[in-house]
Image (cartoon, rainbow, N blue to C red; front, side, top):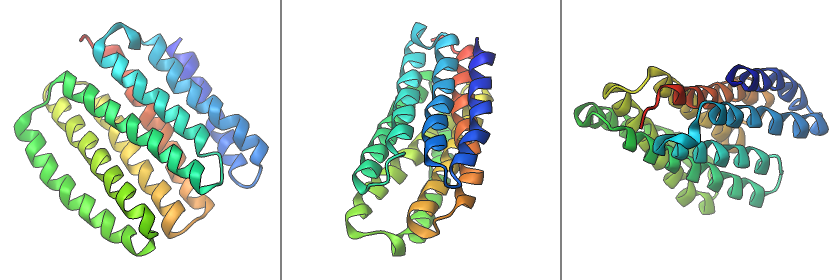
Length: 212
């Protein structure tokens, strides 16, 4: 069934991209289907059979919820959607920590991530409303922690699929930030959405190798 649910996401993605060009109805139909696909992959991979899997499943569910919330155009919808993704990233942080991480590698990765996080904030800062500065700092901190722990978990023996998915998810968040605050446009979805769904699928598929 994992392949069936993967195909659901893969097939819904081009429909979603087509809808993002101005067809709101098509977008609103395709996005929940695409997101349901990676949730289905996790379930069929036995997500609820392990502690790590349960945390990853929670992260995927929060991501899917955020996807639906971000279909709204209002500022409130954006903030609630952002909150759902923030909580989803925290769930991933717990999952990756539960897998076990290489502390030395994580320390090095954390140093690099801190520099990158600072550069991202410097890039975004001139475009942020005052009310968004705090939430964005918190969000950058959490996604950076998620990435660092994914590196550490992979160094400790987790499947590289987990790290690949996390990197793709991390990069997709940059497309959302660019679209929302810096330079709105369809081009952000062209590269951001495929990265996002690839990332979530890879994280879901990584559950096939989880034994905790």
